[in-house]
Image 1 (tube, rainbow, N blue to C red):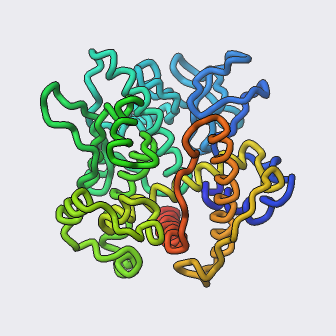
Image 2: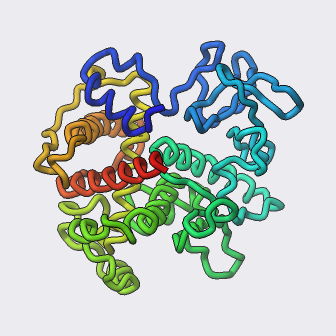
Length: 386
């Protein structure tokens, strides 16, 4: 199976300008055996009532048939048997599958949890459901890109990742969302739309979502994993800056003085201008936004002939590595993204909603995005070799 980037880039390169793109299916566009559209979160087809499960090896939601015993399932064209994640019947509602003989009860996404909120609280049940949906979307994309995803709890104590989903105690200090040494902490109240919107407005952010938090924080984890002790560190410092700069002082300066006046010409967001670590994490998150959203659009048959949007395209001169063999495909991806978001932003405005993608990509940002892509590609190739 092609990784997600290669699958999307191939269509962007060969068929983004032709109707044949509608024949290709990538990421998030699934059909049941009855022909009905089914979606990433579904565990049951609403048309034919077939049970459904997400199979990570295929990156697909698939219909299920009973297996050799209660709790065992088969999927079409596969002799193996599977079981459902133990979180299916919890508020998390996890529809993922794992091998029937896997000694663990939880799927590859749910086994990353170290701490979940107290489920005796009805609000926490709702928060956790939203959190797990966003996290599964993140993990499915990471796996589809060929990146290493291992639990720090029971698979890779040194290099793995785990999550604490915490809620501030009444009258106590707020839980701070962040990353430290493979542990990602998320304040579960970020799952409350009203509270998250108040924070977004107070921070003067154009965009704040659960999935955005996950993509940003996992970017910090992968910086530690893929850049910090690798040959990429020197090039990273040349492009993003020296991460050895005092991080606490940089944050304090940002909150006291705001971003530099010219931040839009060099960074994808105001927060990215705070420190090289934050620039990397923000750029990483946007790389994931672009690849996943384009994959979804292509999966539902969108191509350039559907769009009447034209912008000055990025060129090889805008790239970090203009002579890379994949440079043209990467440019097709970036330029296709600009075309698509121009239309989607106008659609959102037509509904009186905020922009779908409230960001402007400058040429230095495209260079940084290609750098992230090269690091991801290098990690994927290392995974394949291992």
